[in-house]
Length: 227
Image (cartoon, rainbow, N blue to C red; front, top):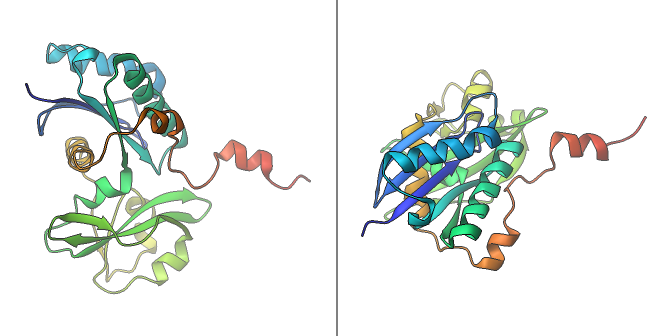
């Protein structure tokens, strides 16, 4: 029988949910852009499963983005993935959002920077390099000053990710800016990366947290200097 995979990509402003059978996405949907992920997640998943006459227990596993990205969105997505894994015993694979975005780089790109807005003039940034068997991280995920990141780019560098739209006017015109993919392409990219990952152990599922590198805005405000 074909494997059935639920795909949860909740790192961005708009959350994406997909269902794959074997190596192909057979259904995808976006959640409301007002970020009501928790309220809509269950019904959206149910609709995708019903469309394929599947039950949660028919899932081989869940592939969930672990970030970086929307703090609330990532927590809702990962908690949903954990709940399904606990309840059904299915696999859980945690996919780095930037690794999935790198998969969408143009065919002529040998390296690509993936960026996202980290707020307060900062960017999440990570470079990926193409090898014969796919894209791989060339360095660790970082939080950098947006201006310093832009100044360090070289002519012809490819830059992708949700941060491109935010910082397009600040990035050198000599760079190649890669537009954000549509919802189906992002779901397909998460599937492509997730298929190459090892399922998390039960202990790893319990310990799984968003890849965020910093606290939420509320946490940073609470821990900041007091006047």
